[in-house]
Image (cartoon, rainbow over all chains, first blue to last red; front, top):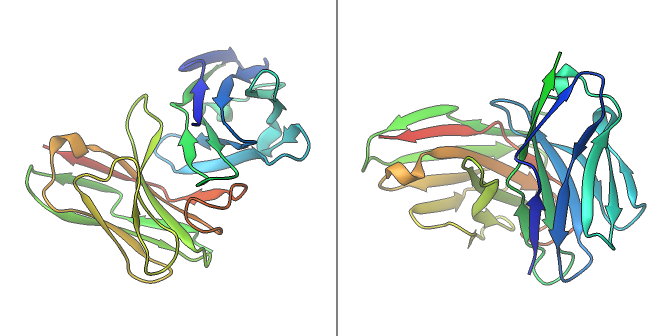
Length: 114
Length: 117
């Protein structure tokens, strides 16, 4: 069975400070992992994805995530937050065998203070 | 490319009314999906279509029907709307087939905000 847990429902940072959004997953098989961003009243946009190549994945807008199998984590980071980063972020897990079911996390809303 | 488009953007229904949400993609993708998004619950799969001519139930199909009209279009119908169907509905498409294609990304439309009173 697969599951994904986003450890924080809300994260608040000041502009220019680092961002950390935490995601833990559970999967019986080697999964593919994704981070999507959703700006207010918009659809979801892919930030980055891990597909068993490099464990450190770089995405758009300066975001990156590191796949840590031993910790079953795929945390999203950015060195310096910008006001435009304020949005909701979803961690997504998909198995690579047996049905490839896609599971979405509940989401983390990121607030960026000036 | 317009990507994935959805109509309407907003809709208010009374309990018992019916309506169809429309979705179209211009990326020649095989798979299409309907999700609903509720606060604190992420996205939940309602129905999906692995290819033209096939549809399958997802996690929360009750109260909904779908039609894969052609490769481009995938519609979601509410036959008798209920307040529990108040939600934001997203259509998505993906190059790979169905729930398969583990490494493919999904492309999402802008959503339809539905309120049932």
